[in-house]
Length: 456
Ligand code: ARG
Image (tube, rainbow, N blue to C red; front, side, top):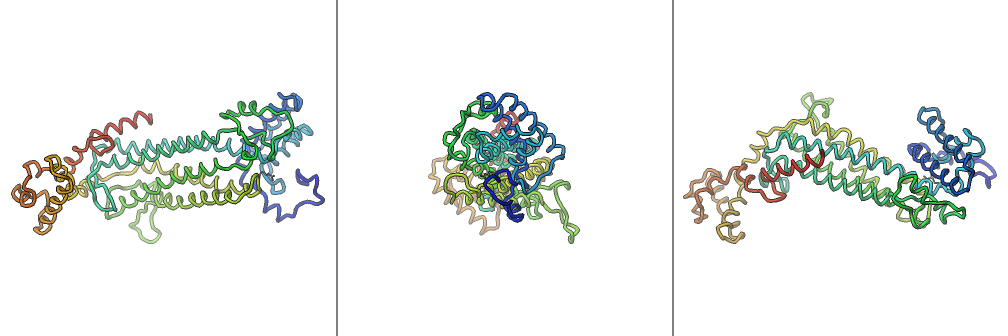
C-alpha cells in the first residue's frame, strides 16, 4: 500500500505506477531532500511540535539513509513513486515509528519546491565555476597571441582588421554576462518555501525563519500558494543556460569556419577531434559541432518548461513533476559542454601567418582612409564617396590600394597627403584604434590585463 493509501481500497495499477513515478530521475535530489528534512525535524523539536529525542533519532536515521544511498545499498522502486517517499519509508524502516513524524506540517508540494531550490544552488555554483574556467582558457589564448592580427567579419565578409585576442575577448564579455544572469537567478531562488504545506500553510506552530537560517536561505517565501506552484526559478535558470549555450554555439560556428580548409586559421588538438570512418584525411571539429547541436536541446528544455507552466491553474498540479527532466537535461548538457570546451580551446593551435594574410587585403583599410579625410575637415559622407571612387578606380585599373602612387590617389582624392599611402597596412590600422572598447594593441593589452587580474 502506498504511503498515501489510507483512503484507497486497492493498490494502484502496475502500469499506472510506472507512468506516475519520478524516482527514476528525481533520485538525484536525495541529498537535498535529506538536508531539508533534517532542518525541518530540528525546527519541529525546537518548536515543541515533536520531542527533542524524536528529532535526534530522525536526524541520525536520515544520516543512515544517506549512507545507504551513497554506498549503493538502497533499493529504488516505482511503487514508492518519488525520492521523498523513498527516504521517508527508509527512515521509518531504520528508526521505527518516530520516522512517521518527519512529515509533520509538511507536504511533498513544499518539500519538492525546497529540494529543487537547494539542488539548483549547488548546480549554479558548479556551472559558474566552470564558466570561469572557460574564460580562463579563452584568456590563455589571448595571452599567447596578444598581437595576432586577423580579418574581422560582418556579413561573413572581410570587414576590418582586428586582433585575434579582441575576437576571443568578445566571448569572455558574453560569458561574464552569463555569469551575471546565473547570479541573478540564484538570488531570486534563494528563498525558503517550507511551511507552505500543500497550499495553505499549516495550523501547527512552525518557525519558518529557523529552517531558513539552518539551510542558509536569504529569506522565506511570502505566499504559500505561489510557493508550491512557482517554477520561475527553474525557468530562469534554463533561460540563462540557453543564452550561455547560444554564445557557445556562436563560438562553435566561428571555430568550425576557422578550422576549415578555406580559412585555415586554427587547428584543434587530436584529442578533441574525430576522423571519418570513410575519408582517411578527415579531422572533424566534433566538440564545436556537438555543442552547437546540443544548444538545440537546451532550447527544447526551456520551451518544455515554459509550456508546462503556462496553462496551470494555481496551485500545485501533478504536471509540475515534469519540470525535472528538462531542468536536469539542460544542466547536464551544459556541464558536458563545459568539461570538454575549455581544454579544447586551451590546446588549439593558431596560424597567425594565415590570419595576417587574410587581413592584408588593402581594401579592409578603406575606412581608415575616409577617417583621415574627415580629420582634414571633410564631411564623412563625402569622404566615403571619394574613397568609393578610388576603390573603383583601383578595380578598373587592376591596382591594389596599397600599390598607388600619390598622383594616382589624387585623381579621385586631390586632398591626399603622403602618409595616406601607408594606411593600407593592417597593423597601422589596428594601432590607430586606441579608444575604449576598440581593437588597438594597447587597448586590447589592457583588457587582457584586466581579465588576468579578475580571473586570478
Ligand atoms: N514527485 C512530485 C513532483 O515531483 C512531488 C510532489 C507530489 N505531490 C503530490 N501531491 N502528489 O512534483
